[in-house]
Amino acid sequence: MVQGHIVFFLLCVALPVSICLTVFSVIFRDEMLKNAENQIYATVEQSAVNINAEYENMAVMASALVHDTALMSDSIVYSNAVAVQERYKASNEIDKILEKIFLTTNLKGSIYLILNDSHDTVYVNRNFQTLSIDNREVAGIVENVPGTLDKVRAVDEIYCEQNITKTRPVVIFVVKPPVDRGYVTGIKTVAVAFASSSLYDFLFTTTADENNQTGLRYIVDGAGKILASSDSGRGNGSWNNEKELLGKRYLIIEQSITMSGWKICSAIPVKSITGRVEFIFRTMLVILLLVISLFIIYNIHFFQTELRPLQKVITSMNRVAQGDFTVRLFQDKVKEFKALADSFNSMTLQLDELTRQIKDEQRERLRSEIKSLRFQLNPHFVCNTLNTIRLMSLMSKNESITKMTTAFMSIMDDNLRDDNSFNSLEHELKNLDNYIYLMQVRYGKVFDYYCTVSDELKKYSVPSMILQPIVENSIIHGIRGISHNGIITVSAKIVKISDVSPVNSGTEDVLLIEVSDNGCGIDGDMLEHIFEKEQNSQRGLNHIGIKAVYNRIKLLFGSLYTMRVSSYPGEGTVVSIFIPAEIFSDADEGCRYDTNSNS
Image (cartoon, rainbow, N blue to C red; front, side, top):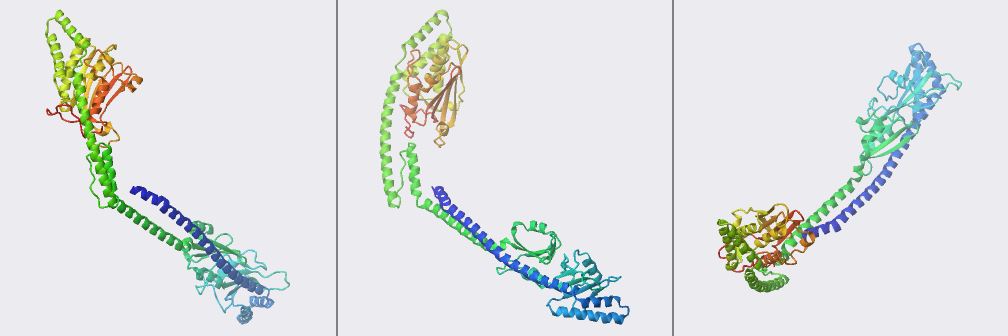
């Protein structure tokens, strides 16, 4: 009952609540992810706009440099100057032009002029330096950028460590002067290297949003190479490989930068977004488990303390159902259970008294039946036996006549004189030996008899005349008339009451006696009704048949003990008798009836 209530609570309350919590958490988690995605997308989009605007300013400055005629002219003077004074004077003019250009913008950076001379001289402005790498290396980098003739192109590289300030990342834009504008220039290529504040803000100052959702930031070029990352250990790799490593654990947002052909990417851990929901869900699950535990503890306490008297009533009723009418219930403090106990005790008392009266009546009737059967000798059997003795006495004078007469007298004496309804199994087997001897003399050696009962089992008590009718039935109806030699075997062993009745879980010992033969067997229809009709044999010692033995067992010991017959036509028959295993005592006189058995 406790398990039933707990299972009902788990299925009808705990399980639906758990499902609702799970569905709610999944829906709420998805909504939080959508909101976070929108917020992060807006942040990344704004960063892309800022970076693109800054890059446009850089590109405008680079384009202005290659279209400045004064700068083009001074670059020729600087490039052709031989004397140091002339070169110094030309460089001052170039710096003035560059300072004017810097005054029109808030950008800070380096301008590299790769001159169109035989040495590819590199001129760098003196007012601000950004890169710490060699000027020749810079010239080599910018010369490899394709499509820069009168078009500004960004170098697919971000310099974070190779800048002088070592704070803000540096980007380089490259452009070559046009050749069809009608003016001469001494500049081969112009490169502007600026420290990007918007790029720095995206990588290093926006790694946590308003919800404190920390994440990773990437700058990726058009070929899918990571140019820079907020985590220095994740740079210079493939963006596709990086996304596979991040997997579904991160929410990834991408935005393009049109001026450079790059894209900025933001990766926010999903757990940082949904962590609060998961915490609430886990907390509610813990509370639910606590409620379930308290409910189970309450149920166990309730059923063990409050309903224990009801369990005692059920146990007592089961004992009554098994035939024990002596059981009584103790008075309980609860009023209702006290009234129930009084009614139950009154009922069992009346049943016990009524059962005792019925058993006394059955005992008297059985004693009369047994006494009557002992004197109902079959005249044909007596005549046939005496006739056999007469013939043997005429043919031969030997001890077999004495033995046969002694055996017959022993059977008659036990059948007519003994007034005990119970004998030891040893006594019954001795009488059976005498009966077998007489039958073998009468029919000849048409069958062999074997007894495999141990000496220990011979001490047990059995009803009188219980084996002879079964053996007689085997000889007359089973073995007599078969073509092969017959075999009759009597065996016994101790089994448990549960082997007799599977519904009974008791541990009482039961004496099992089996009488088997290899005769003609019994067909199925007759076997099915074998206990319903008595056999009226005129050849046996008396008129006690299988049905009479079956009825005696039921009357003496109750419905739990029985007799079973199993047979296969042409193979033989086995008769099994199940009776209580009790040691025989000389005090067992009269017709005995087990008052504790189920009738």
